[in-house]
Amino acid sequence: MRRLAFSLLELVLVLALVGLLMAMAIPRLNAMRDGASVRAAMADLGADFSLARQSALIRRTTVAVVFDTASGIVAVRSGMRTLSRHPLRTTYGIVLGSNRDSAVYDSRGLGYGVSNVTVTVRRGSIVDTLTMSRMGRVRW
Image (cartoon, rainbow, N blue to C red; front, top):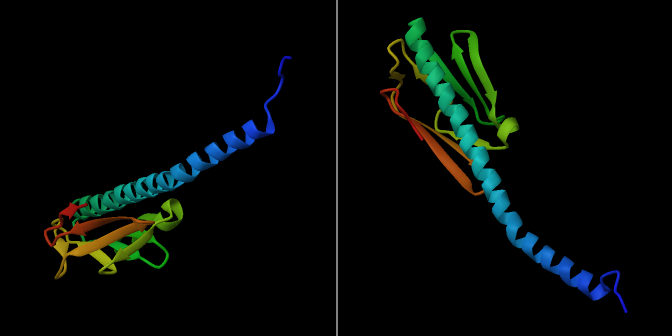
């Protein structure tokens, strides 16, 4: 006799195996998504610091990178003019933290202020830190 379909036992067994494999793979995929979001947000944050430093050198004035950690927005400002604004929380789903509310570059491209600025970007269990020294150098 020729069989044209699968039995109910075979279908249940295959579905159980697929469910088990998905249960093992989904947490890893979430961690990969969180890592990609943090890396992309850090790249945007580094670009904002680079823009601020270059603008300070070109314009010969102070330029600030302003952090709104509550809403996750980073803005680059020169005087009353906003040069750039990135809503990192809504774009990447990250949580932004900082030890100061802004980082300022003077007209020579050096950090203005007394201490280093540290900005943390977090999503899930993935955390990355950007540090701007008093000399205006940025590392992450």
